[in-house]
Image (cartoon, rainbow, N blue to C red; front, side, top):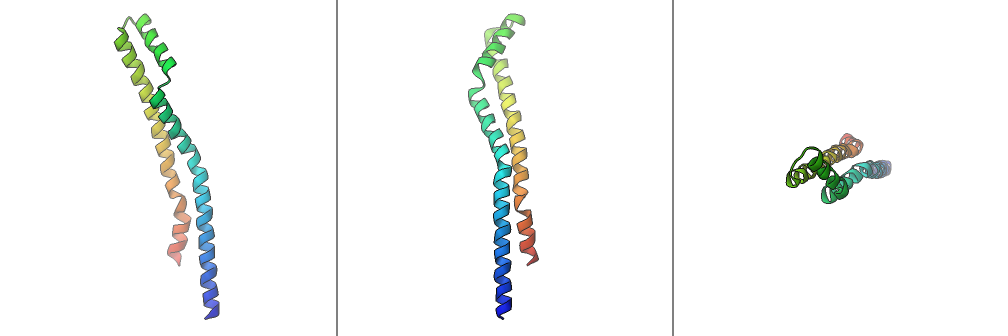
Length: 110
């Protein structure tokens, strides 16, 4: 009975160690997606004002558009870039969810 108890405790310790390693690995894997999402948020909020104003002014002068139309096109362009970066960040984030697969599989085996 003592050996069985020792084996159960050892198995629990190994399971916890695997869980801890998976947590650490998950944290490391989340750094890039979180950074991408933060940067996408900064672009969406700030929309890189100087570059977008430059694009709008170039559209006004080169294409002969009204200022309102040129500024609308520039703003939508910035928004599309922010959305694209957000989509990439979310796709990376979905991969991180799988980090606990090993722990889950080992727990099922018990």
